Amino acid sequence: MGIARELRYLLKCREVEALGRVKEAYVCLEGLARLAALEDDVIYLDYLDKVFPNASRYLILSRHSSASRIPILSVHTPGNPGPQAPFGGRPWELPPSDPLLGWLLIRALRKVVDEEGLSDSYDVIYESTHHGPTSISKPITFVEIGSDESRWRDPRAHSAVARAVAQALEELPRSSCTPAVGFGGPHYQSLFTKRALESDLCFGHMISKNSLRELGSEEDIRRVAKLAIEKTPGVSVAVIEKMRASIRKPIEEVAKNAGLKVMKI
Image (cartoon, rainbow, N blue to C red):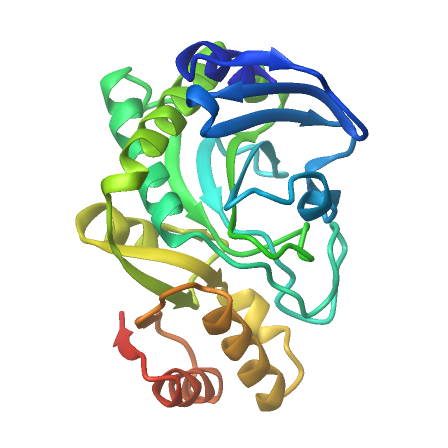
């Protein structure tokens, strides 16, 4: 809500009537975007397509929670790359990712954090694909403040994320990148983030090493690799971090069969 309050000003929003599950509604950017507060927790918003049938993409303003309480500003795609769905959505289901918007956000966050002198207070990073909602037909991206209540309430973080969102939306119509899917690495994807900040590689789904290790068979690994590729629009590159051959080789095979360039890091 803190991010949204800042955005109402930055995007020149005007309030409109809220209907159904929408608690507050605004039209922004001269009608090009809508800002809405819904009644449910963001991980359970599998009904977005019904509420906003004309949307081309979704950007969810959220908070990130972790036991480590690491202070971060993060970007990621939701989804459950496996048989478990403990935090919303359905098992084995990934929604479409939004590589371009995610790339613009991660770069804008890095720029704003540096400009506002927050680099000692917050890290900027991609997170791996996790949690709901999953039953979505349009590209969806989360931008989050983490990782405890003191950070969620920090007005500096609200302002930084709002500025980054406004910049990303402004640049969106005239920007392009090389969509990629990532496999391996930890939950906080530092190497994929570095690649995105230093090149035109823009990541959609990123499946962590832990998620891949938890899969029961080579068949399951192939299934997740196919899902991640299919649900990353325009993907042309698969970036694979170092991991054991029994996991890496099925992913490489699926990626090559899909016509992707495979990069190992």
